[in-house]
Image 1 (tube, rainbow, N blue to C red):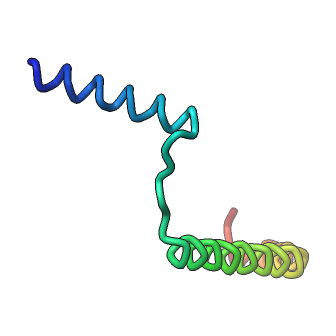
Image 2: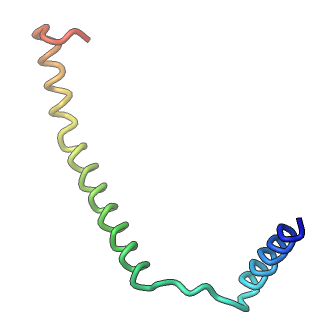
Length: 75
């Protein structure tokens, strides 16, 4: 029980120091930049996908109408 209380107090004390900006957690800058680059790439890919979806949406609707009119697909 004493160990748990000690760990709790240590965590509270560390968080307080972090908040007061007395200590700083060092980050690996290269890893952060790499992750940011990956995020940007994924966002760009998502935008491209959305544009393609919009581009072909009307074509899909027309194809569905044709299929439903010919009776090939029961909806």
